[in-house]
Length: 82
Length: 421
Image (cartoon, rainbow over all chains, first blue to last red):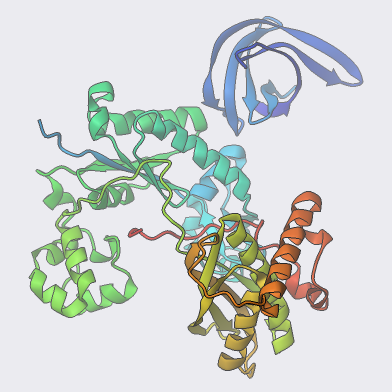
């Protein structure tokens, strides 16, 4: 099952106002970790199956394919229920 | 070469409910409706999803009626900012195909893609692309009607509400359009439908085959118009996206938290409305010469519009109130409490338009007074813009806090539109 999880993201914004997510901050059980966005496969406008949508970055994080969304003014990922 | 017009009418199906479902997919599994606030008595259903429809819940009925039909109904309060954001995103997609996008309310639009066919394919193919893109990019479904005129394309989009796509061509319109009931036609309302049925006209085909002259005799101008509509004769253009028609009137109305039982209470509410209207008039640099009020009592009886026209155009709330007080005293005696009231100012002109006026040698005191009043109200506007609406209010408005605690200027309401602009 996937659910919508808002996350903190470190982003590089270039002079053309394009954004590139670099790291995702993940806080769990007082554990603060940064995950590197290893590769971005695709960027496009899309809706999400967990509701909402926006600019979708299909990327590789921690050897897994993850969909990261910029929705209006914040970021969320389609996250697996642990 | 003359290209045949390709007009698309696109309808975002039960718009508010669908946007809520898109944001929270779990809503799809339950009967859900978007509705107003019962406590403030704006308690009506604005949109419902398919499951709620199975309980025969209708748009426009009160929340109480809806709960009786379906006690488990989930009511979501409307979030107009969100709806405007998403509908604008949808319209951005339309604009990728043509600049001729004419909005008809938030959720409907006409597109003229006649000149875009070389780039994107014919009307039907463009409709397919738009439908797919809106679904992929925003997760919303639209139904589209394609035809050579605005009337038939609107009919087409109404035929299949579930992401339907209906192409009405000159060789098949008789099969598709004619069997439809006559009230599906634009501008055939309840009253006209009754009269038409009385003449034995139940379908659009009946209407199209009726004698036009007879209809004009019976219905006047509108008779000829609906006959043309039924026959697909409509040459009206699709306006471009940035086109805004000139403002003809500015008005506000409100259903108050509890009924107004006396003159003072109604006056306080009218004050709040007149401030909003005066401020909006000044925003648009306009002044008006006709002031009208609308009244509705607690039995939901309308009293029509009572209006007064004056020589000098005005745009301050105190001037508007002067006229409103006269109208109210003339036309209502408060034997039955009032439920909702409204003001509207029309006959508008540019506020800087100086009509030739004989000036008196000595400045009259009323001129000085109205100048002072205008400055005062502009100062109030500035304070409100900077520090918020509730920071400054009239004292008599505070006496009836329950009734007057609203901000008609900011609390955005969406008005139904007219086809003839």
